[in-house]
Image (cartoon, rainbow, N blue to C red; front, side, top):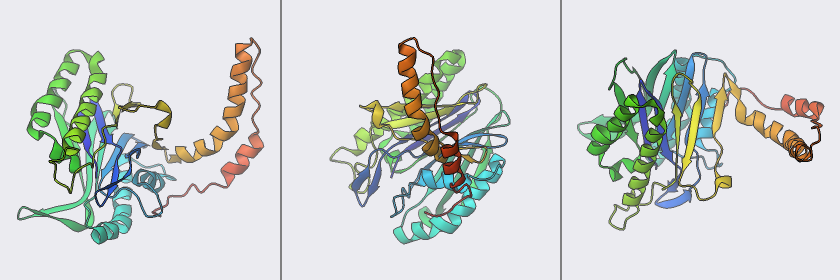
Length: 309
C-alpha cells in the first residue's frame, strides 16, 4: 500500500511517494524507495508504483524496474512497452494470487514536452474493480498553455485525502503561483509532501478502516523534472536522520547506474577521503585508484535486462 501523487504540467513534472511497505496490515518497511529514475533516448521519466511492493526474495519493485529497463537504449515509449510486457509476464500471476492491483504512474519530459503514462492491471466493470489478466497502458501528452495540468493519485492513501480540494484547489493553485513566479518551483514539492503527510495522519488514526490503517508513512520523497534543465531533482521530507535515506534506482541510457556505483564507490571513496585530508593540510591529492581491479569487477557484472523477481 502507498500513496503516489503525480503532477504533469507545462511548468514541470513532480511525483511524490511515501516509503511504507505493508503486508496483511503489518508494517514491513518504512524506508522503501518507490521511484525509478529513467533517462531514455528522447527524454527522462520518473516511474513510481502502487500495489505489489517486493518479492519474497526481498527484491523491491523499483529495483526490478531498473533491471527490466537496463541493457538497451530505447525511446521512452519503447521503455514503457518493455515494462508493460515484463509486468504481464511476472506481476500478473503474483497480483492474481495475492489479490492486489498494481499500477505504475509515470511522469515524463519527452522531446521538450510533458507526458504522462499509466500502466495498470486495475479494471472496472459495473462499478466494481477487478484484477485484469494483463496490464494496460495509457499515454497522455499535456497540451501547451497555462493551466494545462494532469494530476494522478494512486494507492490506499487516496482514501485519506480530501480529493476534491487536492485536485481542484491545492495543487492547481500552487502551480498558478509558480507560473507567476518561477522561482517558487520548490513549493510544488513541499505541497505534495504535505499532502502525503496529511494522508498518513488521517490513515493512522484509530477510526481509520483496518484494511488501510497505517499504510502510508509520514516521510516521503518528491522527484521533479523542471524545464529547461530537464535534470532530476529529488528531495526527502520528514526524515530525522539524513544518513538513513534510501538510494534511488537509476537507469541512464540503458546503463545500470546502481551496479556501476556498487563497484566504483568502494574503490574510490577511501582515496577521496585521503585526498580531502591532504587538501586540508595544503597538500596535493594523490588520486590512487586501482583501475585494473575496477575493470575486473565491472567485467563480471550482468548488464543484460532481467525480469527475475
